[in-house]
Image (tube, rainbow, N blue to C red; front, side, top):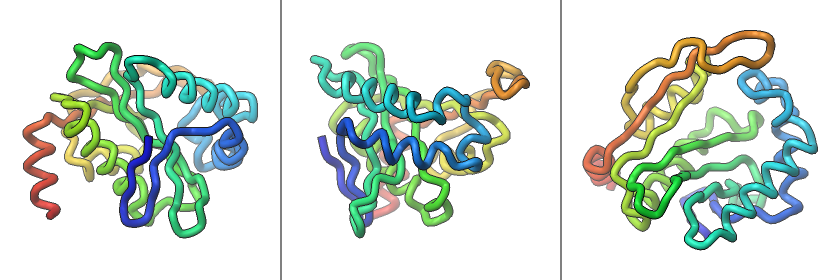
Length: 184
């Protein structure tokens, strides 16, 4: 599967992608809000294998794609929507980006492409995301994509020797359509 934007190609992962995933996940800025097991080479291999397995499922319910910068063909992150059954019209959204390319609007560009696919081709009614409340970049991304804060799950995530609050954001199909039409 391939989605394209002005600066990006979102494509299915291939096995060797674990190298780039491991590289950007080892950055201290990335590690701040993620479990240590995700930030190892073994964790990157496991992640890439998992999303490749998802891509091979029939029917396909999970679309986690590699974000590749078109200008130099460099894998810089991943973005996706995941649902649990073909009858669901609700999906979870997730996006991660190499800290070396933060601040250039690439996450929102990839996120808009993924939401356009979710609400268009997949026929989703609601797409939601959760993030560590202190992760201001992830909160800004959710808001830039038109998601609204639905609530805070207090101290619902334990890692790095502490409890973290999780915030839940969501966008409905009609909200997306209004926002997306305004971008034309």
